[in-house]
Length: 255
Ligand SMILES: O=C(CO)COP(=O)(O)O
Image 1 (cartoon, helix red, strand yellow):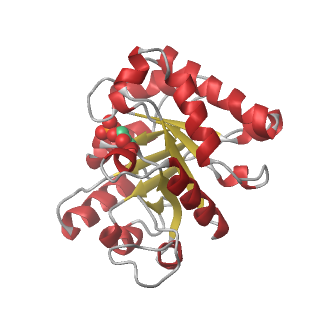
Image 2 (cartoon, rainbow, N blue to C red):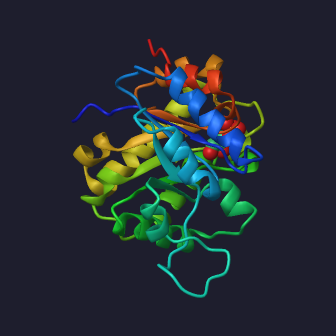
C-alpha cells in the first residue's frame, strides 16, 4: 500500500460575497499554510472566482477545484458549466454528489454517476460526496445508505480510475450544524467504505483511495478525526471561510 497523502479541501459553497473577498481569503490561506508539507491542500470556490483564486494561489502549491460540472462539453445548456471549461481554467478536481446538490438541486444517483465518469474522462479527479440523512442515521442505516450511493455513483468506474477518485463521507446531519461526527462514528463508516471498495476493486486499490470526512470540521475537532486510521482528510465548509481556522485544519496534528 502506498502511504495515503492527506487531502484537506475547503468547499466555499456560495461564499464569499464578492471577488475581492475571495482573492483576499485565498491569499490569506496561502500565506498561513506556507511551508506546509505532506498534505494536499485545495480550495473549491464558486465558478466566477476560480481564475482569480487560482492566480492568488500561484506558487503556494494549493490546488483549485470546482463545486459542480455538467456532463456535456458545450452547447445549448443555459446555466451549465462543462468539465472542459473547468479544465481550461485550472481546476484539478470536481465535487460530485454533494448533499446540497442532491437535495436542493435534485441530483439523482444516475446523474452523479455520469458526472463522476465525465470528470474522470477529462483526467480530472472527482471528489464523490456520500452520506446519510439525520433520519437514516437515527435508524442505523448510515452504512447501507453509503453502500447504495457508492454502488450507483461509481458504476462503470474501473479499478485503474479509482486512483483518481477521492471519496468524501459527509453525513448530512453534520453539515453546517456544528454536530461533528465523533471520531468513532466517522472511523467506523470510513472503514466500512474502504471494505466496500475492497469488495469491488480489491484490497490494494481500496488501500490507496483517500476518504475525507466532512461535516462541521473545525480546528478543535480535526486532530482527533485525522488520528483515525481510515480518515485521510477533511472536506471543510464553514471553517474554510476563515483563513486562520482553515490553515489550522490543514496543519492538523494527528497523534
Ligand atoms: O458540506 C460541507 C463541505 O462540503 C461541510 O460543511 P460544514 O463544514 O460547514 O459543516
